[in-house]
Length: 209
Image (cartoon, rainbow, N blue to C red; front, side, top):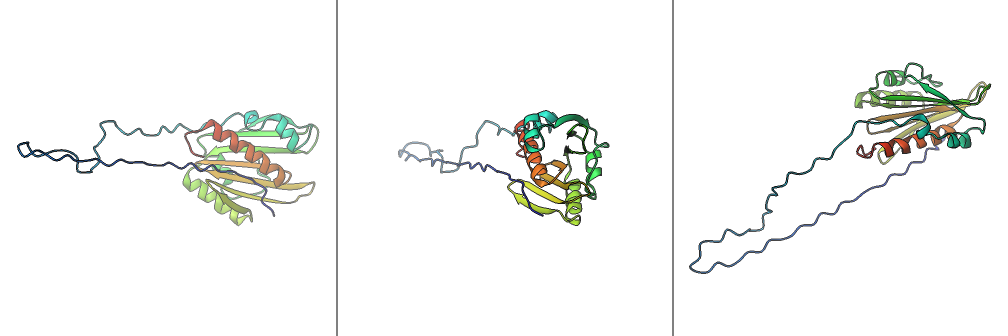
């Protein structure tokens, strides 16, 4: 089993600067000075709270443009439409994964295939709670998936020889988002999951995914 998911994380650094207050020497006849002794003066402006928007999952063909799908799979690939959480089929059994999709507050499932063939791959993107994420990750470990964490993203994948072709699956977790791709090997599923991750990040700039 080999991990082929490539993820990049940009780390932003903030620099804080301060200033020191001076003090004046009062004249002998003046009232005692009330100038600052170095303590910061509270600002009258309320601190701005970051605005966090609800999770938005882009459309299937935004997350995985058809040209990209063809380049990764086959020139004959076509988008076969969306799937409900209940319709999404798992090629590799993972405890807790089906329940994570059907219980998600926000979900989108997608399917691509080569017409008149057995060749296809699928994508699911869902919101998850901390408990649900932990349960699925435990199921992935029990199923023998290999894992890696880079920055905010934890990735799990596996592949093996199936009856007709190589079977592969990739799971990505970041924040409250789970991305699942299943298809013919992790070279494909990793690329598709990575494309979906990029699109979800662009659609949700306030979520720090």
